[in-house]
Image (cartoon, rainbow, N blue to C red):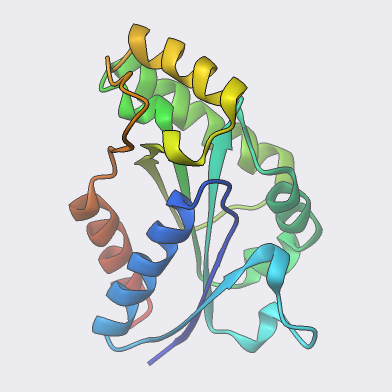
Length: 179
């Protein structure tokens, strides 16, 4: 049984929801997960207290959260010493087109190049349109983008595109590598 840190950054909450599912799968596989938001780490927090780590972040305006990028860059040496995985939540992947998936994979490649981290596994996770969480301007912009891509432009509801089977498969593969 490995103690696995699930460390994440989230803006509207989809990456947090994915992090929770990752922890559930790890626990079912017999590991001891701890889910921690990067901005809300305990004071005595130390990466090296864990046997493995999964980091998750979401993409906004073509970049992962700055605070996640800064944290991973600062702790890349420690992360590279541990068994590790990264998931990236992206609406680009939710488009369903090969171009959208390629763009989402490019965001992951840019993040890893910028931070110097080389996780053992990575996953692109289609995100969610959370109109209920957006302010007026962002709701308008996201609606215009959705009209051109998914067509999901009814701002009176939210849309989730996450493939939970893929999330569970990615996590199960990582959990198996810890045996």
